[in-house]
Length: 211
Length: 241
Figure (cartoon, each protein chain N blue to C red):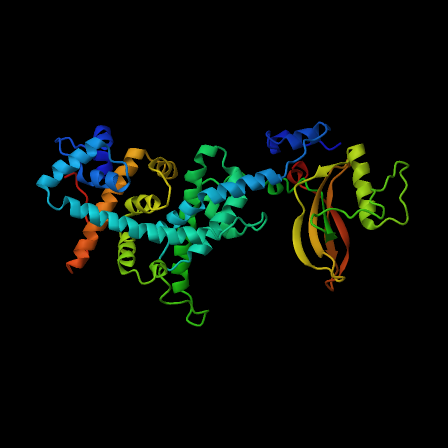
């Protein structure tokens, strides 16, 4: 029988060892229906806040549903690689942020395409258009997109119905007290931005101080 | 410097700043989120006597929060329409989205199929009728062919012959299983309208005992025609894994 050199084979591969020793091999275990159902439940429990994370990071013109589908596909393909279940939320957030950034890069590339390529909408629908004619909501939502990432994301996550500070902390991998501080400062920034716009002063991103 | 870092744990927990003044932003946030304690409400009352804009700012912050909840509520409704896709539809984009999670830039372990690429000694391109699940169709009567005598029945389909060969291979240790699910290349409705015709790769792990290992190299004549195959030894790494 052919002698397989050990050095080339992953020592963790039971199948390889079994084959070498001519032993009955462990059967590769495909995902069971239970695994698939569990993953589906996991997705359904988390997709609302994933949408909020995407909203916080995606370019305005990117389609939220498309990005959610990208994230869902990544969950199916790679959730099994998350070894520590306690890091699942943090992993899922990273996947969502990557999807949003990838969309932004694709958008930048599109702008460099030749003029005769498929035309893209030059003034894509803004997320805030879905709020319809509610002017105050539209204004506040648009101002929220001007906040720094570190404040915008917790603020939008807090707007997800039923999400607690502790859960937001798990998603952002930050202590609960830091989450509270960021939400508090984010709210102040939002208020100050709104006031500065109302007074028709030049737009300034407010600076947060200790006082 | 970020003010998150400048604030002590005690300040964060109590909402009281080092100078004894309650943190205005924290109090407003606790009121909005329904987390304010009795002490917080007392601090708010006390603060409002010195700071006439306090209640107004609380009302404005509450209005902003409702606006954000409406925005995120719309996003949540969109998310409710997005379900997990069926496994197998992994695009290059999906790969890129997922593997960037690792801060050190390492890709996670590749799929078993890729690791095992060299081991998959036989990949059989099959055509099957799909009836809910990819499997070899049973012969009439619903029984797998029993071929204990080692004879091949002339009436068997190629599929049945293959199943029998695999069964015998498992018995004598030459075939040691299949790796993973079949990889579907194409599907189309069956000509008779019943089920689908599916073209798929069925990776079967086979081992063979050989004296030498060669690969064929095409021999081409001066007119460019292939006139034969010249055996070349395989590099050890191809044989090894």
